Length: 417
Image (cartoon, rainbow, N blue to C red):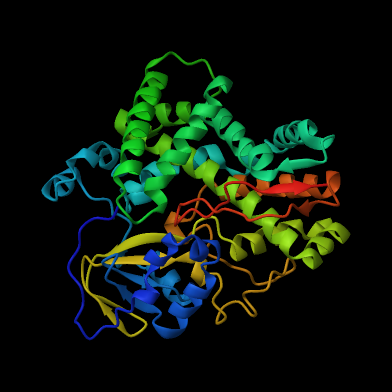
């Protein structure tokens, strides 16, 4: 969902449909979007996409500029009034949640809420979870170890962050499956450009159910740890200013969704990348100390989050192209992370790559505050898989990518060992 903005540039701008990100709707393009990204970077790196009514930015330096500069706002969510004006008032409940989420806020509102949420993800807090996360991974792999096969997504990549996030939030263990289902549904609106009536109804139902669920969680007396995020949100106070119930609910939702989607796709995409590059997998077997470096390379190579939207707050120029106030800009992190001007031989997986400052977790004030947790979960998952399933191999057959254009991940990843 992107807020309405001023119209297209002059007709002289190139509007080649072959360069539109809408092509990601084709399964074969979604399976390998990098040739499209390369074409954009080479032929029109600041491209006006008439189908999305937004600029598409694909070079590393330009993406960093969009994510860093104060000339671009993260507040791209249409207001209920704007949706009503264009006949989409049915989506108002979704907008009411998203306009309060830190992902779509600018400072100082963003800083206020992010500071509170970040307290649950401090390095010390995250490190204290190491032993527990290892126990979870071992338990999940115990259930498949003797079978000689597994679906990496269903058996590890999905349940691991689901369990961890439910515990961090302070939710009952029995609710984990429901929380995961809601996260997958809400991720549809975070990752896709198009308005799909069928998906919209599913997301609407999901938002209404989550809002009711977290309202009841907030209203009920809680005896859980003060480390639980729900308690941190309830108790948080900034110079006498507390979060409203609507703000708490909205940001618990986006934290829950982000905490699951990022780690799930890091593990799934990462395992697939290693299996497709056996020489790099062998390097990790020979030198497990490379795992932290490998995680950064896997994040760069197959970024869990492929793009994010911004809006120009004033007339500005990027790469010699004039962007007018209130025009939308889509910063394609997946393309920036394959930019040869920043990463030598970018289409080659190199688990020992140095100087690897990718943008998979965003940049600047909107850098993913859950990144330390995702990295820790990924490290433990990869290290344990290398140790327990050293001869893992990809099963034959086609792979299917989730129909989410922005949050890149597989529906299944069958392997044998």
